[in-house]
Image 1 (tube, helix red, strand yellow):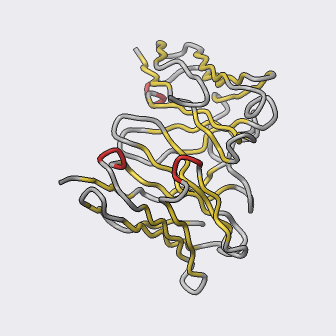
Image 2 (tube, rainbow over the protein chains, first blue to last red):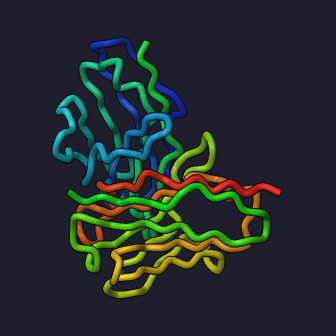
Image 3 (cartoon, rainbow over the protein chains, first blue to last red):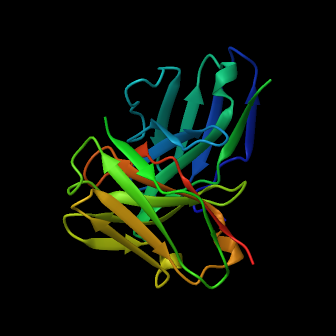
Length: 110
Length: 120
């Protein structure tokens, strides 16, 4: 059971806007920044969003992140077929003294 | 460009130990934390532990305390993760990862992964 809670699945059609949520507690999201990762089958995760809402170089601006209190969201605008992947949220947890992850959300582009 | 290259597939018996290596190139090694993250088949990501080479002190996730040892060799820019008393539940892909900053847990750089299979 993951420390951070994500919906197991999400879906959308090309061009749509999709939101993936991530819920935590005061010891993690409530007091530390949130990162998001994208993972395709058989490959290592890729950093998509860091420090709540920052994109690494090369990440399209269709991807955006936000945080409010003990929850965070990843928004994908203008959904594309190549966005079909697993998405994970993560944050430092002060009680566990390490980073914790959500269980992952499998995004399907219909 | 920072690159992390891991050692190859491992097949181990229950009760044994496994050591996975991660060679870092293209950037400063000693002052940037290297973490290990594992992913069981069909499951999510789980932090195992991490180390900042210059301090030579590792931090471990509570559930792995006493069973995992993370070390580095600064002469070869390589990090190692040893996991002992293996059970079938340790079957997973093990990744090494490095953050954006020296102590950052925003893992920007990842190794290709090492599959560890525990089988009798």
